[in-house]
Image (tube, rainbow, N blue to C red; front, side, top):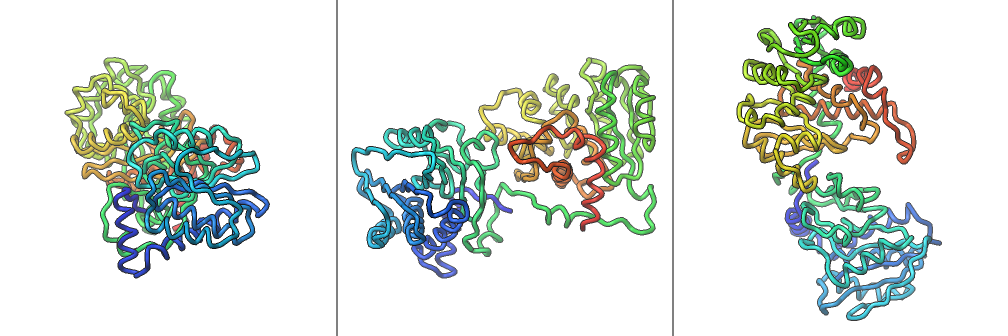
Amino acid sequence: MKIFTSNQIHELDKYTIDHEPISSIELMERAATAITQAIADTWTTFTPMVVFAGPGNNGGDALAVSRMLADKGYTVSVYLFNIRGTLSDDCAENKRRAIESKRITSFTEVTLEFDPPQLTPGTVVIDGLFGTGLDKPLEKGFASLVKYINQSPCKVVSIDVPSGLMSESNTYNVHNHIIRANLTLTLQHKKLAFLLADCQQYIGRLRVLDIRLSKDYVRKTETIYNTLDMEDVRSMLIPRDDFAHKGDMGHALLIAGSRGMAGAAILATRACMRSGVGKVTVHTPAANCDIMQVAVPEAVLEIDPEDTYFSDAVNSEGYDALGIGPGLGQIEGTAIALIAQLRRTQAPIVADADALNILGSHRAWMQQLPRDIIMTPHPKEFDRLSGVRSIDDYDRLSKARDLAMKLHIYILLKGHYSALCTPDGNVTFNTTGNSGMATAGSGDVLTGIITAPACPWLQPAHSLHGGYVSAWSGRRPRRPKPKARRALWPATSSTTCQQPSRLWNRR
């Protein structure tokens, strides 16, 4: 699914109005109908509603919703903020309709001073102050109103976006001037800010409402940002030929493990095997030999000359993919062997964990990275790679995108919504993440899945499909309520590693 900028969202609305055709006020009615139904699905008519509407079209949506809720029997109090004495045309029309309906309990147009109503625990506030067009932090009275709402015990529903939150970058926003919604009802498409971890505190539960905006515009409009869904992944899955043998399914090389870190190598190897590879060779120190042979008897072991760490670059001829980094350690001998390995390997490379930490400590080596290498850093690992601590998630994402284009590499920035930044400047988000994956070993599993050369994401541009499978697999054992989630140790060991093949079978 495409993620549009605020300007593109405005163009999408206009295109729909011009080509459906439909008037802007009728389109607003359509949006308000969907919003009203979502609210009615959540709260009974015994719930008092307080509507705060701004002077623009977001306020127009809120006024239309207030009228429709009143028609359904809700007690609705409306506060329309018209400080400058100017309303958008559709907001003005919905003001007229709201007043004429005579079913709204109270309607107050705020032009100067404002005494806010008491907001009780049983009250639901409908936030329609500002929408996607906001491009600067809220100030003065609006900032005070937001603080008042956030400090109140009521529930808050935001229309399209929480007021004060900008659709893309909030790097220089004033974060206590943003509504903290319990429920955000966004229209048609997710906004970029919704996919960034430091904005989650404002969004609450998110619902995307279909208001039937133009599919033609969506299809032909290019976007930088996209999300990945199950159909995208399934479309890339290649069923095995009935007569296939292990030689047809690829040979992966994993360079992983050091003394005390055999577990990382085991997790990566199991995941790689489970993801369809025909054969896996693991290069690891002698200290890990016995446990590796017991834990993953299917793998071929290649023993490093040193007993406890990776010290010598491997001849990579004959391998279809290389995964390097899990449990590798960061001593100087390993660092030298790592850069030598990256220079000589011709096959696709997945670099994670200590491989990234070493590069972060030797940033001059970044210029020597092979084109199209796939790097899978978590936020702190990426900050070390970039050499600068990021201000926020948007800043980090922008830096990752720039670095991917500059070095012609692929950066899979891990998080709840992992983002794949490609050399052509595109960014694709995986939305299957869950907090149960926040446990040691998840990254090792991901390395194994992406490395498996028999899988469709052998092409670097498809590496996010591996991230999707990893996160999807981690969701399968989880059944607790959202607030009771715990770290899923099975999701980083045999249980998760068995899941990818089940996804193949669902095709």
